[in-house]
Amino acid sequence: MEYRVFDETIVVRLDKGDKIAKCLLEVAKAENVALASVSGIGAVDDFEVGIFDLDKSEYHHIHYVGNHEINALTGNLTTQNGKPYLHVHITCTGRDGKVVGGHLFDGTISLTAEIFLHKVEGSAERRFSPNLNINTISFPQ
Image (cartoon, rainbow, N blue to C red):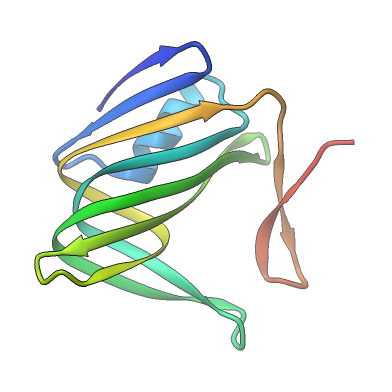
């Protein structure tokens, strides 16, 4: 992984074998990013996504292997208990042309990825919502 800071944007290049979530959280911690939007493209060969099951109030996990192009990596970075919290979704296309995606738990880069963290002035903290059974954004008073 390598990254550079340009004003309010951090440009991150991930390399083969890098873990998406781990690297983005490391950058956020190193650069003291409390709030940002995330967007990116690249290629991944081992990744796990989730689709939230409303009836069971839990994520259904799906694991994919094999080279996939990342069509879109999008989401946000906030904090929870003072630590960076990443919430991103991913859409990928495999060799067979099928598009898959969902809430990204993590993925391993197969070639490279180009990800932009667009810092936002301010902060938003994640808090667990017992009604929804997920962590939702809450705004400081």
